[in-house]
Amino acid sequence: MFALVDCNNFYASCERVFQPQWEGKPVVILSNNDGCVIARSNEAKALGIPMGAPAFQYKEQFKQQHIKVFSSNYPLYGDMSSRVMRILEQYTPNVEIYSIDEAFLQFKGFDYFDLEQEGHKMRKHVRKWTGIPVSIGLAPTKALAKIANKIAKKFADRTQGVYCIDDEKKRVKALQWTAIGDVWGIGRQHQKRLEAMGINNALQFTQLPDSWIQKHMSILGLRLKKDLLGIASIQLEEVTPPKKGIATTRSFEGTLTAFSDLEERISTFATSCAEKMRKQQSSCNALLVFVRSDPHKKGSLPYRNSCVLPLPYASNSSITLSKYAVMGLKKIFKEGIHYKKAGVMIMGLVPTAERQLSLFQNNSDKHLAVMQSLDRVHKRFGPHRIKLANQDLKRTWKMKQEHLSQRFTTEINEIIIVKKGK
Image 1: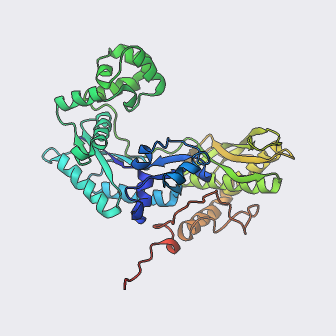
Image 2: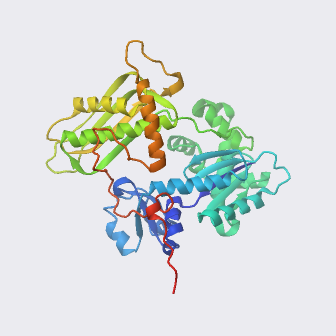
Image 3: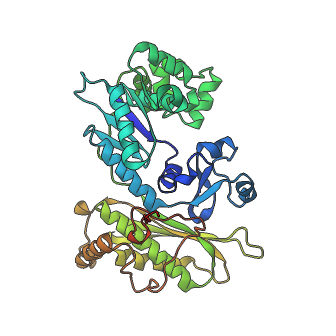
């Protein structure tokens, strides 16, 4: 049996754990630089706040309807997610962290357990230890567990947040209830094609011939059909594979015109990419630098450009990547442009242990000890403690976060202060 554990309105729930006065009230979370709505509580959804709503357009509505607005607090959300996942690992060693707020669990050798009761126990455990509400769907396959989870969430009063598809009658009924567009793995284009054929729910999808599904939806579509039929075909990925591409991009709070300011940003982005690579023990063979002007600034010249720079050897050194990123910026920088966004993307990732070194180039092995020391300092004392010389040592660039809450669990100076009552 598989279980899908999904944290309910995760970002909003994280904020409410430490600020319970917002429990039961409408809450929205904004994206980087407070751009648009990326998460909503059920109360905010009921008021008609759409996902992706531009914050500046809905500012008055937030105020009139007393909707609490938070800036994204990713250090808090990441730490709370880690706490939830560690609790789930106490129930089975077979856990696939699917996203920041979702995880698949596989129960092997639990034949004599009442897994629905285990689900209720798990749900209470997570709620008690973290304050995060979760919904749990149980089924013989991952695709069915997804549907069971949706039922558990949709009919929370009846299911108490846990639903188990454990017989054929429940499976058929669940598939009939599930619209084809809500089936895990059915994208928008496949949805249009299937609906045009009169396939409107998951049960009808399972009745299509294998040959048609494999021809039009590849082997992945065939696996999905078998999963929905109760034949486990989509396996658990217990080890997260290394990322094949890494990028650090940001929109600036204002606009930048000076090369020195952009150089500092690009160097910081390249350093961030290098740190991410070292965490997964990868190196890259090339990087891309891009810049973009502010399309909304009156009188500003529209401009966007990018530059790809192959590296002479695969590297994950912050020094090397920063050097080549700045070289790329010099090629595409133009005077008189109001730059609003820039970024660095790294490509051609390979495992560091298997990278091809150059016989005729001075490889970056001499940076290895420096990078290891840098990572140890940042792990122990926090990020941005040590910077490269072309980064501004006295200035920490921040996103626009006018509604940022405290980092209650990751920053010692922002933990909750308990005051003794009179």
